[in-house]
Image (cartoon, rainbow, N blue to C red; front, side):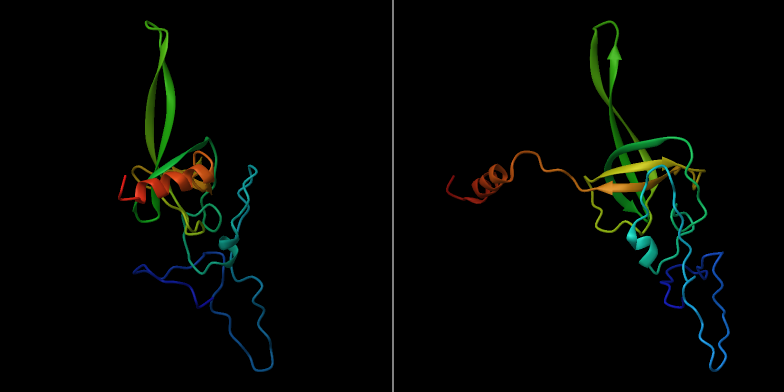
Length: 169
């Protein structure tokens, strides 16, 4: 387990894993219990990267000491400028009684995103679960992500792209 990526000033390790196993000549040391990974429950599958990764994140719901309880929400990722934290936008409709109409509203929330989620970009949808406060603004953890859906058919999208690239038009 000495191949852990150390990016912080303090040495990062999982508290339940013993790293200083002594080796004796002729005795094999088992590497089966090299990483602590937990099942979050609630129908959420643990990402493969949580098992195979070489990072340590104490705020990760899969490899850290954070439990998910309370609300499960979904939204769209709008910002990834913070380290291991994303901003998620939730759109909803608010009813105006006087006009008997709905108006669009949105709210933003910050969520901790584990390094287990690879290839995540702005515009992707995310499912977040409530946990204990992790910082001043972060009270949620990303549990699942899905790539942004393309609107319209691929054939039509290719036609629009070629139309936009044509300098004659």
